[in-house]
Amino acid sequence: MDIPEDAPRNPAVIADNVGDNVGDVAGMGADLFESFVGSIIAAMQLAQGDTTKVMLPIWVAGLGIFSSFFGYFAVSAKDGASQKDLMFALHKGTIVSSIFSLGFSAILCGTLFENREEEGWKIFGCIVLGLVAGIMIGQVTEYFTSYSYAPVKSITDAGITGPATVIIQGLGIGMISCVFPVLIIVITILACDALAQGYGIAMAAVGMLSTLGVTLATDAYGPVADNAGGIAEMADLDERVRETTDALDALGNTTAATGKGFAIGSAVLTALSLLSSFKIQAKIPAVEFGDPVVLSGMLIGAMLPFLFAALTMLSVQKAAGAIIIEVRRQFAEIPGLREGEAEADSDKCVAISTQSSVEEMILPGIYAVLSPISVGFLIGPVCLAGLLGGAIVSGMMLAIMMANAGGAWDNSKKYIEIEGARGGKGTETHKACVVGDTVGDPFKDTSGPALNVLIKLMSLISLVIAPIISGKETWDEWYWGLIPIALMLLGTFLVYHFYWKNGIDITAEVGNSGGDAETGKADASVEEGEKEEQPVN
Image (cartoon, rainbow, N blue to C red; front, side):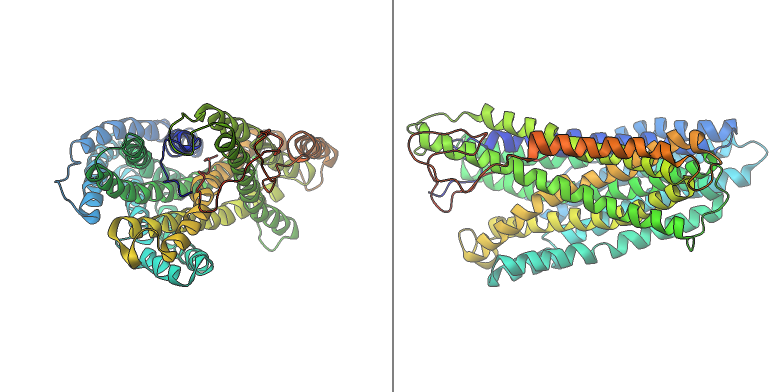
């Protein structure tokens, strides 16, 4: 039985629509808001009591709201517009907002820095660099994730030889997409450091995020368009409507990927600014990377994003397995559901996804909060500085790769469905790209965005405990570090005992007698070819 992606008889379809909103609207909004607030806090901290510098990030952020408002009126497109035309329509909003934000910032830097105009214009230069860097990262992300360009088309072409080559090509595209965002961020950091040291880097992050209103709206466009297509499918509207929503959905995948690239860039600048604040608060004069203590911290920090990504990926697999079991049970037990003559119990799938999301975030949350506390108290602030540096570098690479690879996989499938490439829907190439899209969903919607939160959260936690460990030598009062380590071990044991020990058996045979979706004892198999939806953590 071949069930369309948004068929109303699929019990998981509502969970998919809810997951889009939770992930790309609420989740991404929270992520960017954290970056926004974090960059302002870092800038105020690095102002070193200078009243003008303390107030500047607040003024820039406030006037950025009005800039985003003006950008809203610049967004427009004509009927029958191509993907490039639609993308440019959204870019106009970002560009107009950025121009207004730069104008307001110039006025602020020219008036607030009385008798030190040169310093004010240097800080304005940092704001300009941050805004330009954000726009450029968005453009690079668009190139690697839109099917209007060669990288995504190459993934579709790889589908001719099967899903394995789709996965390989997608991973390669994701990895190579790290090059240009990294160069952009590096140039921004070096230039801002030359202009205004650590405060300049923090103001670059504030500048990048000053047009957050229109940037977040562009990102939220993705799930809105996706759910509009789902509603058109479920309501059995005219095929012309579905074609329009499919085109908008493909654009939405690109805007979502662009938003994630913007979020990663701003997270790195914010985390770096918080790291500078931590060094000041912890009274660390210099970090010597040849020091074995610092290098050990860097290795631990570089490992943490991989651990965090692994836990979130496994969580998606576990939650998806539970939903698949529930969908199979409903098809087996609800008469007429297969034929579309009965109504599916969508609430059950939403409940499973919600419960799994909360349960599966316990362990990553414990590690993210307690890891910097453990290292800071057990070894010392110098090792903790190395941990933060390693986490920022490793987390940025992994987040960009996962977000862009996921977006590229998704649009390689959309390229076939919308443009009819390589024979269109139903071909073996299309099926291979669907496999890539399935792998890409947890990449771009769960693990990739979660890494932004990880590096910022660890930086903030470190800044909070900095006054406590300030001035301490390596291994000084090390025994206090055993407490958070013991809490991590206890948390790991409890999570394993209550949530991981009794895994879901998704291979269970199902018969007509019914079963329990929670234990994995279900009763009827769904015919090969049925497509279940993955929840978004």
